[in-house]
Amino acid sequence: MAAADDDAEPLVLRSPEQFKALGHPIRHRMVNALRQRPATLRQLAAALGMAKGTAGYHVRVLREAGLVRLAETRQVRGGTEQYFALVSHGFTFHEDVQGGPEFLISAALGEMLPARPGQAEHTVLRHLWLDPQEAHALAARLREQAAEPHTADNSRGDPYGLLVCLYPADIPKLGPEDAD
Image (cartoon, rainbow, N blue to C red; front, side, top):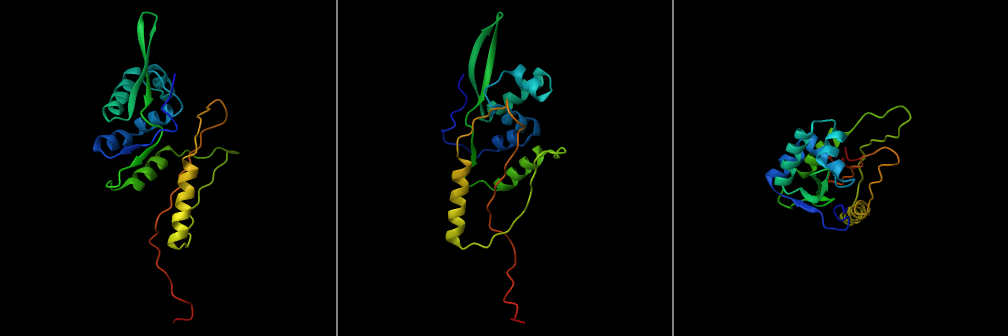
């Protein structure tokens, strides 16, 4: 059963329905589960600890927003089993969309768990002073790194999130120390 193609172009998010669909914590978690592989409503309900009907409702919202598709159907014990998949493993924002970074940061904060004893964790806010060429070069390297194919092998280890953001910072520039 094929998942969304890792080499496919990311889905460009632009509609209010897409943001509303992704903005709900359950649907956000559902999208993260579907990044691993296509799944049935029963599998999604079990993974998310909810009733199958609740999972069905949230999948319907994601489908209507154009984020999830029916990937495959199978006949099983006299019934039909439907597998749902993401339309793309990557999402990006349309250039006219306002609030994209806030949306991503909010999503990342919503899925962050406190580190358990002995579990790796690192969060830092660092400011860099770059000229425009350095900033463009760093942004290109980060995009290239983030675009590397990733296979979701959930049979090993725990999931971790990585939020990388290069943004112009609103930091006042002090003049030279002897300019008083």
